[in-house]
Image 1: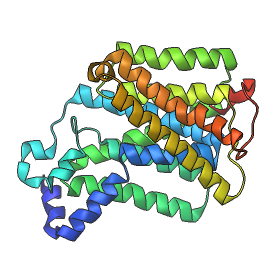
Image 2 (image 1 turned 135 degrees about the vertical axis):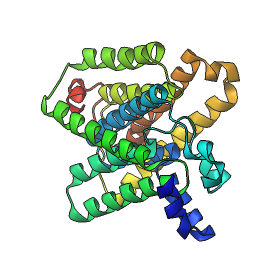
Image 3 (image 1 turned 180 degrees about the vertical axis):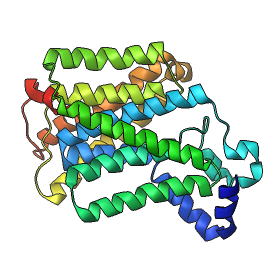
Image 4 (image 1 turned 30 degrees about the horizontal axis):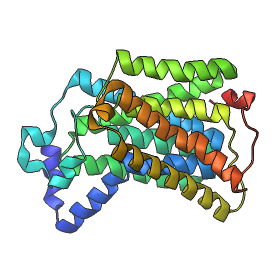
Length: 293
């Protein structure tokens, strides 16, 4: 608690707004946009790997939170919460920090992919700021942030090791494993967000195995592909929220299927629409897609 109070000695309304903006860069909504952008506009093979590793990491983070069940700082001392908006960014238990872990995984893998000094600097600054914002806002203890950073680093290293093994099960096995394993984990070892993380991870495995997307063309073309994907995802998400009964959305099966369809909208439907609009190209049902995992 001493570190939180020490940081909050510099508190001001302006700094509160800045830190809340920084912490929102690590929100589920922000990463949804970034993952769609990465897959459709930057590099589909890398975007696929990033999506699977990132979402698997988010699920593991959720699982550890359930097992540890550490209270948040503002639960221990309500006065450290900078605002109700800050509290709204911190559901569930405290250890390890999901924001810190996700920042390391996303920006670490992105920096390893692009290998540019300026990108490494930007990635490092974002990771530090996001981690720092969680402590300043009073929603994490320093140990939670350090734990999240460590977990994220381990997940990145394990993902790199697995990639070196060049595991290529083939199209049929990829589809079977991609459909069965995440769903089985969701049913057998559920968390509050396993329906989201595991279903979308499944979509990142299955969708590209059926339809190969090629992120190519000018910057304008790539941005248009991203826009197509984001609009489709937003439409399906909004429509499913409005049309599905609340009890079905919250059910183990209904919630999983809903987010699986949303995930496939970005990894399968959006590439097909981009091809129809002549924004991209690529063969359908590419048996070699599994090598991109």
